[in-house]
Length: 286
Image (cartoon, rainbow, N blue to C red; front, side, top):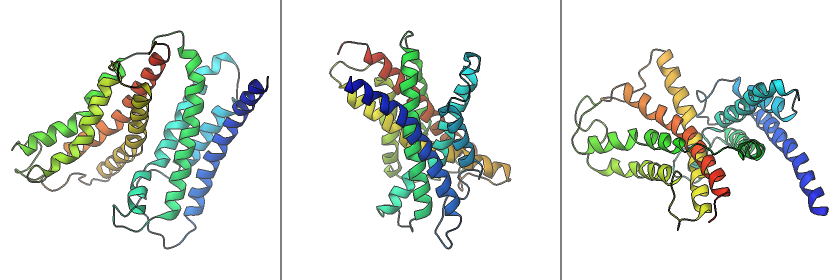
């Protein structure tokens, strides 16, 4: 009885915590603009209305504004809309970490870091609520496995072109070596090749591989690429809309569009593939 009551208490408090984190991220964004002379690097990351809209969408879903079954689809729009927009607010947190650890030798944007950290915490809370509530609805249907194939396809453009260039190819380049010389640039293809491998493992994992390892890798990949892909796509769109060339010297304009677009889509696909594996493996004997 005590366990049931404590579980009920958690179920009641979790939505409040998620909503409080959303509001805190919004407030941090407002306060960020009041701090003068701070090093900033995220002015073009997202429109100013994104944090407020994300918070309102999340709040509308959490409070369950209408229990009528006819409004279930609209509630799903608010649910996913709030989550994805809050992911957008959290974009750039990886670069904050690299600046704090001095792996990127640039000043730390502390107000922006606080906002993005709170937004990321809100994303985790919202995702936990969403996945917990969606598990019961998905129990009667077998989750699709094609998400893993989609993630595999979206992980390939960057490493494939990098390998092509390393061996002398010039597709998308103004001249050989415009994207870097030698085989050193191939090192940054390793994470993408690992991501492609992970995508296939989430479809049909070997029996000896622990479930927790695949889930940790899948959700970590979702979080890392999810905090890079949206802002990369938005930056490209803003540059194109402003008549600017988002490409580097000697690199065709479609190359960064392909790379950043594939990162954005991979973040979505790997998240769905991980969730599909999580549901399928939960009912399989291991």
